[in-house]
Amino acid sequence: MAEQKSVKRVYKSHFLTNVIFRVDFPKILELTEQKPPSKFQEKISDKYPIVKEVKGEIQKYQFKKALDYIETEKKVSWEFSNKEKTKRVFVDSDFVFVEYLKYEHFDDLFQDVKLIFETLADLYPVKITNRVGLRYINQIKIGSGDPIDWNGLIHPSLFSVQREFISRENNLLRSMHYLELKEEGYNLKFQFGSFNSEYPNPISRKEFVLDYDCSTNEEMDISKIFDKAKEFNKEIHEWFEKSIQDGLREIMGVVNND
Image (cartoon, rainbow, N blue to C red):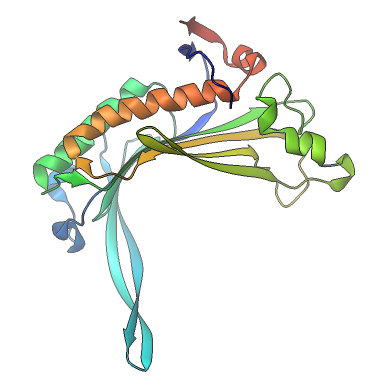
């Protein structure tokens, strides 16, 4: 995309359906014992009072001379939710993520990130992280209009294939695209396109996904993840602004334009 001047905008509404902040770290042995993290639960229970045990399996491939076999190991993870079940914390032995299903403002997410990961670092021997990531998923749904023409709403380069290359007689089912970029200090995975909620029927609804996943795979002290969260939020906001046009801004309603 062409370089543009950074503009900070705040909107009355948005199309975010999922916002996820995830941190991966070396395995915490205490969390592999299938015992509930009761002290962790106690610290976050005011905001996340609902707890659920999540059972799963890990398949390990074993190679011994002429005999190869798969060994299955049972595992238990833990999910904590608020009363409305609009946000959750998922705790595994080597990663934790916070997910918002109803997002309003980054400040709210950041306060929860501070609570969760400061608590984690206080209770467990987590000193370094293997990966830190922030992901914003926008599912843009417009009530009417040509479902494959996003002129004036989305940057033309993001939907030109379905508008210029595909014939209307082709009955397009889905048009999703994927870019992976290495920027200074982070990697960006960007998925975009017409996801089609009625798949495998032909596209008939005006829907478009803008999915940004900003991360770093470098080891860092866990105390630095909070600055990374702020940095990634700023970067994703700028990529979002590059991806949209004024028609969509009008629909969302600009309340602040610095």
